[in-house]
Amino acid sequence: MAEPPITLALSKGRILEESMPLLRAAGIEPDADPESSRRLVLGTRDTGVRLVVVRASDVPAYVQFGAADLGIIGKDVLAEHGGAGMYELLDLGIARCRLVVAARAEDARDGPRQRIRVATKYVRLARRHFAAVGVQADIIHLYGSMELAPLVGLAQRIVDLTDTGSTLRANGLVELETIMPVSSRLVANRASMKLRHRDVQDLAGRLAAAVAGSGTPATATGGA
Ligand code: ADP
Ligand code: MG
Image (cartoon, rainbow, N blue to C red):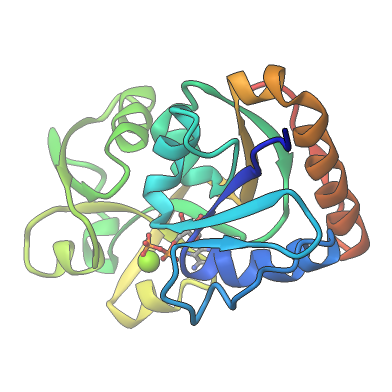
């Protein structure tokens, strides 16, 4: 009996766009365009690989519970999730940005008050960061448009991703500190690493070669 396909979960949006050239270079050619197709499960030509396309923040759940053997996610999403049930195999060097603390330029001059409100999608990372720097922070969980929160007094700080800083600047916000640099990672379900070791390593190896060929060196990131 033929083995079931290896399932790779891809993050919709920016990461998907930047993943496709790497996947193609690794010999994975989807049977429909994942960016325009409405199909959520795609086959590939000549490989035992199946692609599922999901919301970036949902990829960890698919990998953790083994619905996907592998996934491509931002380090931000991986760190916020905590990485339970998965190994980080490779830094793909794509979708690079930074997780930062930002504030309105006029508030940035005052040091943090006794207690500040921080708006973010990254509740766990924000909590850990402010605990580490000894600032009492009430974390407000938002799902988007974090830049708005300081402008209307919802929060004095935000924790959000930025690349060029142009969205922050456009809203009169300045970066105060970088929490972590972010790029996309290949992750594997822990059980798949054992049960489908050869297939997982084969795909990881081909992606590593594709990353090396793309000019940004692939870094084997080892354990979780
Ligand atoms: P969503 O809006 O669903 O969170 P995005 O495409 O905005 O989806 O972000 C998905 C991932 O892309 C993030 O988790 C991060 O790893 C990466 N990313 C987000 N913003 C940027 C950016 N400005 N530059 C590069 N990569 C980014
Ligand atoms: Mg976004």
